[in-house]
Amino acid sequence: MNTLDIDDTDLEPRSVVDEVVEQMRMLISERGLTIGDQLPTEKELCETFGASRNTVREAMRILKAYGIVKVRQKVGATIVDNRMSSALGMFSFNVMEISRETFSDIQGFRCLLEVSSVEEIFDRITDEDLADLRLINATMLETEGVEAAAEQDFLFHTRLVRILRNKAILDVYGLMKPVILRIIQNGKTRHTFENETYYEHEAVIDAIVARDRIAYQYRMKTHLETGYAHFRETGPFADDPT
Amino acid sequence: MNTLDIDDTDLEPRSVVDEVVEQMRMLISERGLTIGDQLPTEKELCETFGASRNTVREAMRILKAYGIVKVRQKVGATIVDNRMSSALGMFSFNVMEISRETFSDIQGFRCLLEVSSVEEIFDRITDEDLADLRLINATMLETEGVEAAAEQDFLFHTRLVRILRNKAILDVYGLMKPVILRIIQNGKTRHTFENETYYEHEAVIDAIVARDRIAYQYRMKTHLETGYAHFRETGPFADDPT
DNA sequence: AAACCTTAATTGTCCTACAAATGTGAGTCA
DNA sequence: TGACTCACATTTGTAGGACAATTAAGGTTT
Image (cartoon, rainbow over all chains, first blue to last red):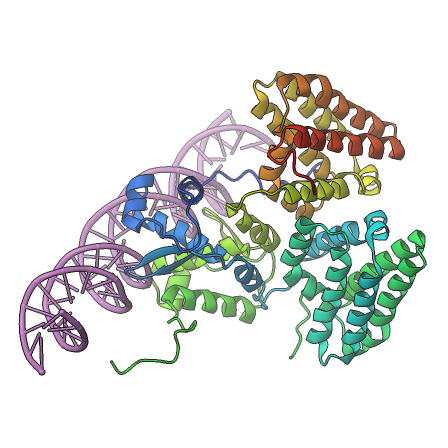
């Protein structure tokens, strides 16, 4: 099989709606519009782009879904920045779990960020970082419920990535939060967090303290793969009577 | 006015489109639809929800923007999971200026993606990948102008990252394209591309062919830092002491 | 069986019309 | 003057119809 399952989705002919979205993006950029500014009315956009109102409206729906604009009747479209909440919102589609593909992709990404970056982490880590990690891990035990524990678990890994002192990486990690949270929660119970996750985190911290690169990479990789094992057992569509 | 005070907060009356989105969500949940399954046709959805086709289409646009469904003519709407791509895609609307820190952060990120991932790249690379890389690099010489060469340069690195077969990482790399292009282009001339970049790329490919991990990491790291050096010499923040 | 053609179903875009919301300004009154 | 009322105009929200573009499916021919 020569089929690459990655780029088979890239060859779609762009629809008029997509074109309009692109033109709106350029319009925002060219006019230097920023948060609080108004976009032209639908009618004006129709004339500017030579598209029908339906098309313009569908394009505007995309911007709204992205959290780029807020539209009110009579007032029109105002530029906002609710992208973060929109990003979180799209994962509130609880009905559908994360696909296996997405899951393994994200885990691979995390592996790169948290395991392969061992040199940078060891270079930059401070006592304060270590203290924070211990504290966050201890706090996880005191939380109540699976969700709170997962939140704290995510915070642990975020704090670890923060050691890289790289805002771009940290932002991307934050973007992936909804997905990672689901991955973390998948197939776990309070018991899992208290008897497995906690000690795996401690083992990782210990490896850092001992400046043991091999141990760190092994333990972190194992830790991440443990989550994957849970995922495979319960599957992405296990119906959970909550 | 009888309705006053209280909620200046976010208590917006939900539009019919929002209702339809919610109903679609429930429909997916109730029928247990999962990735690969088909949604009803627009016509059926209109009848089911008692809404007009425009309304259903706008709702569908939201799902598409969320990366929940993929729609093709004649075929209809298929459930997918491109939410990560969508979440990242919404940040292509960034109008914010690029700071010096961002540049170095991005370079650090690229270093992690392209240098530290050496094991995964060596594991997965195929002859087709190598042929593509050679072709892209050769094509760079035949382009005209600095911008076209930079585009091809970026394509080379994208193709390299694609070897990881990780959609999340590829999406992130695509997200950084505007910034990376600026980094690549900065302070370079046609001469630079033809006499430095080209040979650096070839050296990287040769290292892969020889399965020489050390050489690969050294050459790639040097290559990335060379670009950054150009940036620091002539870039907008050249004399900025940190 | 394979290649080609026809058909029908579905989405993509455009159009018009009206409803709903709301800022604007003229007009009124204290 | 100042504040209040209210009709009006503008803009977005929804509905419904028409046709184009695409393509899966079935039928026909070689």
